[in-house]
Image (cartoon, rainbow, N blue to C red; front, top):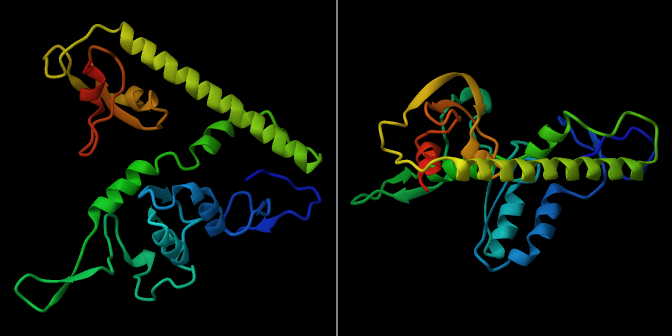
Length: 238
């Protein structure tokens, strides 16, 4: 979305967005369907946020053999009324509509999908990341100008941001090559806690934004370590 307060008919009101008036591009579902035309019948997986997702979109993507995962807003059409309200759910709670018969019994039980949640959290890490970064040092300034100049300035900001990310990735890879090789299980390299939460250099080399308190006491760089990702070991393996 590009900020613009001038007069133009190509706009659509979007509730709960920081930029409530955006260019008219149709419904979120049509955007996804347009972008995934070349993926039909390839068995690909796509991940999206609640602005684009809906039960209808999931149905149409399934017809094209495209696996899809994403959050969805409760006011979307065809959302089951049995969903518990968000205010009644606590952190790490999940609710499932999938059911199967219990082994040796005719009783049906709920099928939990923790893998789906983990995969969504993994692959959706970059959503709106570009906008978050470029907004800090935007070239564009507030002024009453033609709408097409807003588009030009926004594309220029995106280009500058992408160039910086590519340069950062190159610097990280170069610094890793200059470091002496080591064994990740060696006592010479230990993972300790830092008082400052900084960017994981291994994730940054892949243009992914993740921050952590974990730091290698020998290399002096922050490295992510969770139940699903061990950047500390991957960083030290040559």
